[in-house]
Length: 319
Image (cartoon, rainbow, N blue to C red; front, side):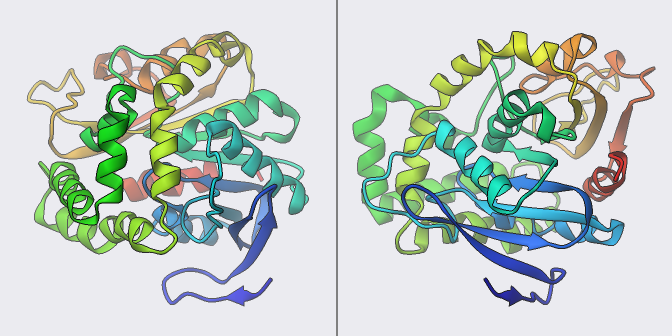
């Protein structure tokens, strides 16, 4: 365990936390209160939170970022079976190893199921849950990028494994998805994407050993995980663990709708309990919310920049 300092990040401590096969790479940023435990999705790693962590540190909140097994700087043992259940176990291992009494799991993208399922299985150790542009159960508007949809299609397994094993073809696929992700962005947003997010994803696959096997296995289980979580929605509704949802919305020509077509993103923050009053949150995880449904709700902040929403994350939960 060594102390490290980044020129762009607050000081942090590195941990290697052992799992059944291999170890997890964890960065621990000091602070007080229930720790924000930051959970990445695929095909990225914990560095996707490097823009968020500087907003948490000034508020004095402890933040812990995890590379799930098979991603980032965590080990990638040959023959490992990667799964959403394994990722939940990764989070549980970190909580135990660091002696965390209570946490706020923060799930982005495919980190959402781990955040929610930890809260369902360990409510006594969960101060709250924060979800950012995540999925959980089935929803009418649940859609994923083409890159993910291709690898999640079980009927195309032979094709996707071939693409993954052929660097030139896989690089073309990454470049295609990179262009799709930048559709509708401003020049400044494109520059930030290319300087920050693009390299996080690219380096995940360029490093050796690569995150490719973990990515392929996790995406292959996407529909199975959605189905399993749909069966847990009853428990989700009954939970009284507080939930903060931060979801990007795209402003359509009509001010009364949130249009998922490419456009200028704004961020919608919802703070409610996960209990019976929050049934609409289940829909909002994967579908387009009508802005008119939210206009009179004091818990919802619309039109925020990403920075404003991130800063609220640091202060909205009590220490």
